[in-house]
Length: 335
View 1 (cartoon, one colour):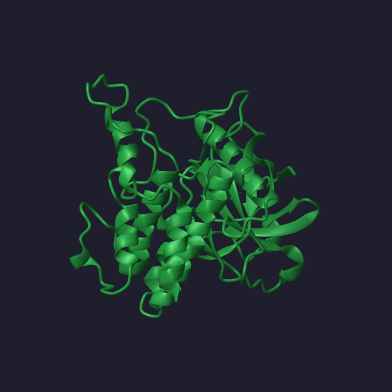
View 2 (spheres, rainbow, N blue to C red; view 1 turned 90 degrees about the vertical axis):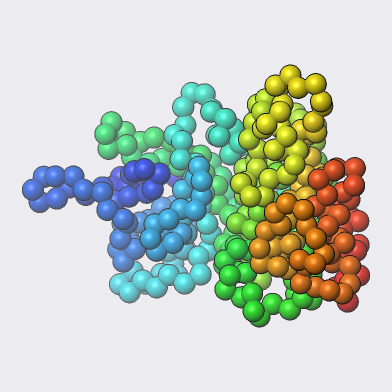
């Protein structure tokens, strides 16, 4: 499902900008004008969409990607455009397509494949992909269109971080436990296909338009069978502040010839560790750094602390072996 952006839209420093030629002949690059929707029109799979930035300041919040909101054109009044709830989100990889794919592009393709597999299985707690393919963006310096990989997905009204920041005083403990169960189910869904997420953090967890919590951003995903291995020796895998002990071991010790064999395999128990950090954040609104202690946990009754403590054990042998164990125990705490 390929498409082409308008010719006056270009990529500049990783952001989509409007390329203007001023009256004096000089060239200017401005933020796209959302009040002129007809100049921001694309067509995907025979449907017309107007696009806007994810945030009003043009911030992508997408790392290696450009992220935009898409609105079905039939629902927008071009004379008085009001952009309410987007119909889709589009994620475009910033690196232009060449005859060979670099590693970030290979990860992007792997993410797309994983999302389609999750969709085929009707998973409830993984973000839903809608389209994918190649989009063309004009290169004004070389007067030609360059190709970029993209995919579209369902719109999410919140990521977990922004939701907690806005609503932390209004969320009950029961609602927090229910949220934790939804995320654990999402992890179970990924594992059912042999996937390890490896990048679980509040920014990659989303509430969709129906209020359903889902795991997204599968850009670091790996599969249990290692059929398509993209990791390098001593690779830095995972988000800062949310990394697992084994991902840090991999970065610091792998391939260095140390006599002691450190645990460097990042697998489903690593996902459980990261999810434990997210659970702590959901309950406490901060991140567990160092050794966690019960005295620091605000919930003084029930088994929430022992559950999270076990998930956060630095030794894999002392963590839960399977996410089903976590779900079972959380369901007891839910009631």
